[in-house]
Image (cartoon, rainbow over all chains, first blue to last red):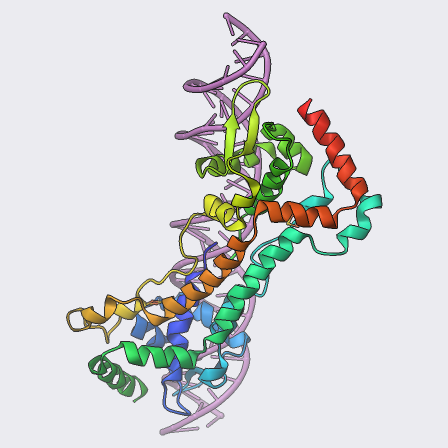
Length: 165
Length: 165
DNA sequence: GCATTGTGGATAAATTCTATCCATGATTGA
DNA sequence: TCAATCATGGATAGAATTTATCCACAATGC
Ligand code: FES
Ligand code: FES
């Protein structure tokens, strides 16, 4: 069970967008440059983020991306779902309905309720989602501000100023 | 993020092994037949389960597989780890150390602690694991016994008797 | 010895992930 | 209006992973 690289990329990029001055947007190319990511592939991920409404797009000169809503309203779970879909990661293929001991006619009633194995797995998944839902882009920004030296914060602010110029 | 089919297959099979009379084992072929699974591929999964000690093997005539320890000591998490490894599903590629604003020399101290994004993701993963660790094969067996009609339980007991004959 | 059963490595098909490109359409500013 | 800027979405292809099969081999019990 592995998350695609798009999840990490997107969290970093959305955090940067969250640090933009109000009303401004940043070109995809700059977003990639800041993190040293492949532009073409990042573009693909941003199409998904855009479709999910997590980022809004500004076309034309001085255009680019900005957050689709305020940074405290975008959770890590939102990002995951936008990129990798809303399916369960555990897939119950209804093995219980198969094999020499199955009797579809007789057993049908019991199949209307999800099998207990799937329930257990999905419960764990829910716990995972709940944790992710707790953390917003605003939280990430706040935590990063505490982790990074004020000197690096300065470097980043400088870069942003030039990128937005 | 998807779990491989081996996880579901293995849970079903270990549950069946957990229902075996004490001291008995079941051939892989029979295990596959019971669930209508592909023998060759199930074999591959059982190699992993065996290496992890979740099943013990009995070679030779009347041989097969049995549980490696009591069914209440085998959790769904054990099975997941045996099959898919113990890595984090979120991979922090240290994007934070890259890009035009990074200065390895100056920033090195802050990289000794995990970045806050990874910490959030790993925390969610821990919640997931904790839930899976709570559920044992014995629990699965118990829950299934409650879900399945006594009539089907009888059919399965019958099949087992023949398979062990 | 001999039939039975799992082991572990080799192999390959199918699917998903990663990555790139380009024709298109929308917007802005001159 | 025109030209430059910028995202969109589909097509495409290589890489990696998952799914699946096979076989020579080792271990066991009779
Ligand atoms: S039947 Fe296999 S997990 Fe539901
Ligand atoms: S640097 Fe990207 S998640 Fe840690």
